[in-house]
Length: 114
Image (tube, rainbow, N blue to C red; front, side, top):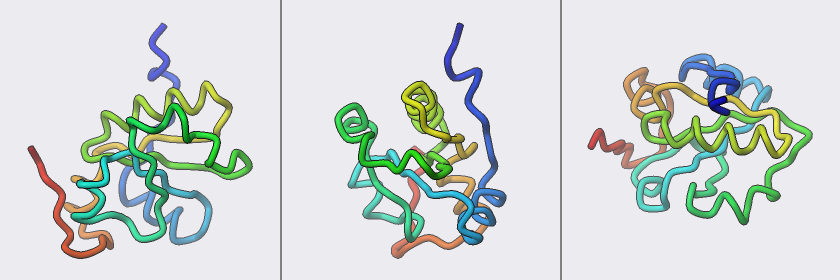
């Protein structure tokens, strides 16, 4: 069975609203070079490549939403973290959708579409 089938999904606008109300915390699993070009202020950065060793840094008592560029890495990361016991959802469309919806992003606000 595919573990990503059980990952809850949330869109960028809903994620932004929940984050601004303090209902969820954000985990960005992009690489530092991507993060430096623009990210969500207040999100936690743990690159996918470091998740296996650093996931315990995440507070298991809160709800999380996982973010990447397009939603693929974050879906995989969310599946792994759910198996580890975290309450985490995947933000569909990633930072591409976040930017497209004109939601707040740090300067210079560049999200590469590859």
